[in-house]
Amino acid sequence: MIDEKFVKKQKSVIEKNIARLEKEIAQNREFVDIGSTNEDNAMEFEELEEKQALIKTAEKDLKEFKAALKRIEEGKYGICVKCGQPIEIGRLKAYPEAVYCATHAEED
Image (cartoon, rainbow, N blue to C red; front, side, top):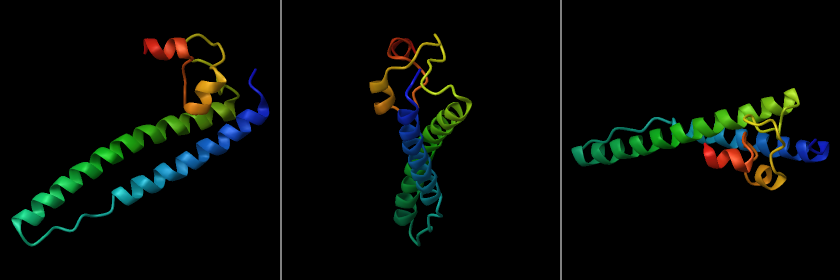
């Protein structure tokens, strides 16, 4: 069983990551102003594509952090979803949203 103090600390880390990602997504969704020349438009289109890629990655990460928060609330945090064994503390410190122990993370 994982120490409750550690889980509480991880919950705080996860909540901070959720807030950061939500802010990042909102900032990247801000409208890109269309320029007055084709060159401006090309640069802005490229910027829009970059923002869309950042949003996609941030949304994926956000989903994983929200799932980790749900696991904490359900008392399932830190348990590998494949084998049911505890996830290594070092792994959880590095990846608070981890769902697999080190063994099964390598297989995935």
